[in-house]
Image (cartoon, rainbow, N blue to C red; front, side, top):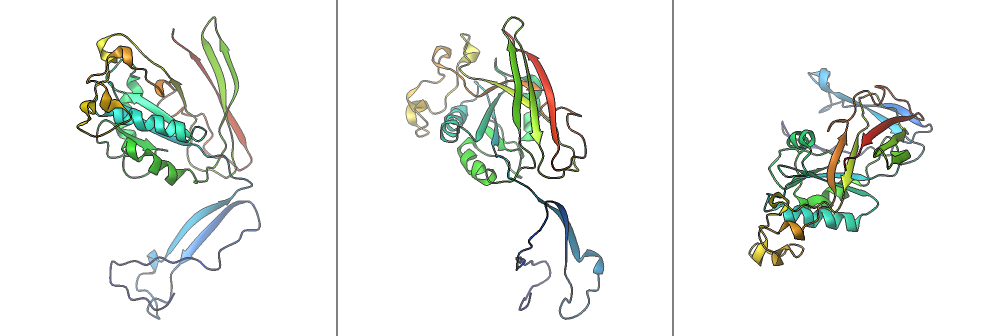
Length: 277
C-alpha cells in the first residue's frame, strides 16, 4: 500500500488482492498486520494487527429475514405499520417473517411488549421496528424493505426448520421441534426461540378500534387508511401478523443449544404450547 497521505485520525480502506482461497471447509484464523509505516518501525507495535475467524461452508443455508414491529390499536400512526407489514408479506412471502408486537391493547404479550424497547435500537416509540435484531438504529415501517435488502444476502451459520409438528384438537396442545444443521463452527451462545403468530384477530370492544392519523388524507395516502375514519371501528378491523405467544422468552430459550457447536452438527429443541380458545 503506497502513495498514502493520511493525517492523524484519518483512515484508509484496502482490499486484499489477490483474494484468499481456502482449500478446505471449516474455520480459519486470519491475522492482518501493518508494518513498514513511513518506511520504518512503529513506535507502538502493540496495536498493529487484527485477527478474525472465517468459516468456509459446504453450502449456504436458506436465508429468511425477521422483522419485529412495535404497534398498538391506540397508536394513530400505526396504520403505517400495518400498511408496510402487509406490503412486505405480499412482496416477500417466502423470505420475510413479520411480527407485530402489540402494546396496551387486547393483543399484548406483556413480556414481549416490555422487552421490545430494548430489542429495537434507539427505540423512538410507535410504530418502529428492527430487522434481524441487527444494526445500530431502528427502522420505520416504511424502511422495512431497505432493512430486508441489507439482510437477505447475509450468510447464516445454520439452517432452521420446523419438524415433527402435531396438534391435538381436543387438548389444543401443539408440539413441534425447531431443528438446525450448522454449516460453520460456533463458539458463542445461540438460542432457539419460537413465536406463534395469528392473522385476522378481531374483537368488538372499543380497545379493538384502530386510531388512524391518516384519516381525511391530511397526512397523505396510506394504503387506503386515508379514506377510513379516526378511529376505525373495531368491526372494520382485522389484525394480521400478530404475536400471540413467545417461547420461551423474547431472548430465546436458555440452554436450548450448546455453547460450542461444530460444523456438520444438527441440533433440535422441542416446544409444547397449549393454544387458548
